[in-house]
Length: 120
Ligand SMILES: Cc1cc2nc3c(=O)[nH]c(=O)nc-3n(C[C@H](O)[C@H](O)[C@H](O)COP(=O)(O)O)c2cc1C
Image (cartoon, rainbow, N blue to C red; front, side, top):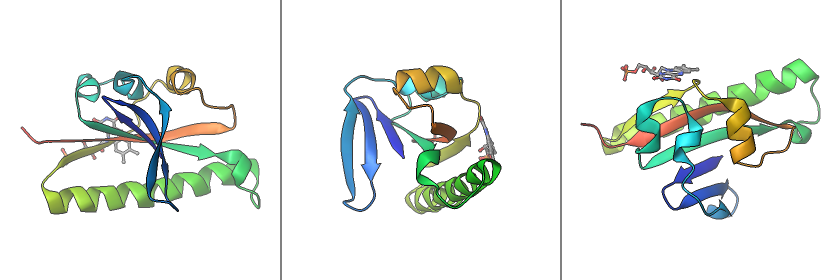
């Protein structure tokens, strides 16, 4: 899970519960094609590293990782609902330019993004 904030882009290390800095630039606008993306405080970008999915065929790698993303995004929805935060999962992404902006490897596939902010 990549985390795009005004301060930069971070990679979430779930085991250590840590945000590791990746790019010290505000790349929020690169995470989606809708206007609110650039100004929302947080954009999560779910990236599947297909090289780490060992026991599945090509198509299944995408199916399994996309299902994982669905579970994680739903947990984010539940947390946001509990805290009164606005949230939207997004598929409308220019994946090629985001892959370039985040310097992702070819086997890293952008599955979905999710914006979190404050409701109007
Ligand atoms: C896989 C998936 C991709 C989506 N992509 C977008 C998107 O790119 N932009 C967007 O505004 N809504 C997108 N949506 C819809 C929103 O996540 C949300 O369900 C919709 O805006 C309804 O939200 P509301 O009930 O709060 O109005 C997507 C939903 C799913 C399940």
